[in-house]
Length: 272
Image 1 (cartoon, one colour):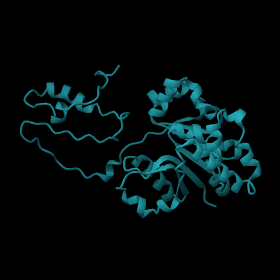
Image 2: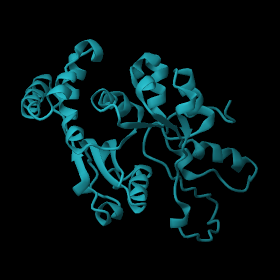
Image 3: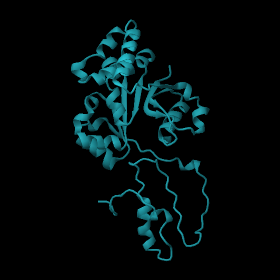
Image 4: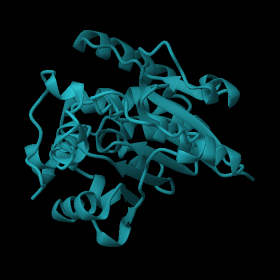
């Protein structure tokens, strides 16, 4: 029987998150059965062709939880009463206020749990630590479930801002923690108390085989630089500024035109 894997993401499909899309389609190519659970619908109109090619929208469940407290209470109550006859023990465990600490988390547990109780997955793959924090309760309901969380950057900064306590039960109950780099992500996870034996380095990037090489020649007095990155404040888009340092060694060329535009401050160069 094929292994069944559930991906838990923020929005889906997002045009900027090709690293998630590549993992999903790669696992499907290897013969695994993959479903996707997104916290919200994607605002993007454009999507990658793989979304249609692999029929991913038909494999996706969007939670789209209500934004108001009363809306969450109504939906959680209706969900609890509908699912309770089929999964009484699991649904009652979702209500453990002493363990989950806040009424907000209890409501979310009730609304998030049903599809996982019905589908019985072998493994859950959470992208971003915030999703790992909010869905680790599934281990209380399904102890045999393998729970994997992949950390990126903003979810690591969360620990710096709110201390390691923000991760709650995740370090103790998670089975595997994926860090995109050894020097920073893994080191920070160790500082926050994650077990080194369960941390694995798993880099992500652009598949350059899909980009055909073209010879480029300088045009005029400007040096044109194309930066490929997610349009997100956390992205390391400081290369535009760093390129200006290279231009100092090439005085006959002016810095890129984009460096004349107003931009957020970037860390000093070289990095410390």
